[in-house]
Image (cartoon, rainbow, N blue to C red; front, side, top):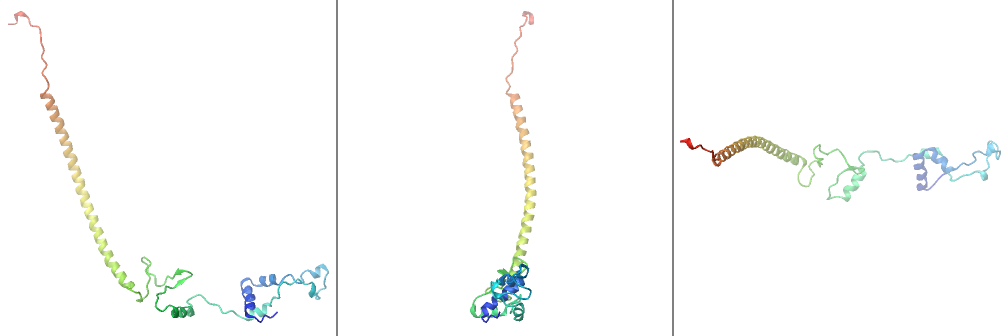
Length: 199
C-alpha cells in the first residue's frame, strides 16, 4: 500500500521506528493466519473476503527507504538563530531540558559566566570583589576569636579572684560573728551558800 499524503506516511514511519515490526503486525490484523490449519483455505491460496485486515499497512521495505531527518544531541543552531531574531534586547540562558548547563557555571555559589556580556559587572569583577571581602571577613573573624580567647581568660581570672574574695569575706564575716557573740554573751552569776565563818 502506498500513501500519497505525507502526514499519513509519517504516522507509519514513526510507529515503525518506535515499535518496529510489532507495530505493523498489530495494525495490519491477523489477515489469513490460521486459515490453512482450520481447512478454510489451501496453502498458497488465500481468500481476500475471509481475511481479517484492520489497516492497509505499508511494507517494511518502503518504510525503510525514506530516512527521517533527526535532530542530534547538541546545540541546535536553527533555534539559536530564531531566538536571536526574536529576542534582540534580552539576555538568554541556555538550558537542556529545563536544567542549566554546566558550561559557564562557576564552582563557587553557582555563578553564571556570560563571558563579559553581563548587564552590570562581569564574573571576574565579582570574583575579585568576593576574594577581597572574604579576606577582610577572615581577618575580622580571627580578631574576634583572639579577643574572645583573651576575654575568656580574663573572665576566668576575674571569676577566680571574685570567688577567692567572696570566700575570704565569708570567713571574715563568720569570724566577726563569732567574736560578737563571744563579747556580747551575758555573764552567768553563780550564787553559792557561804558559811558564816567565811571571813
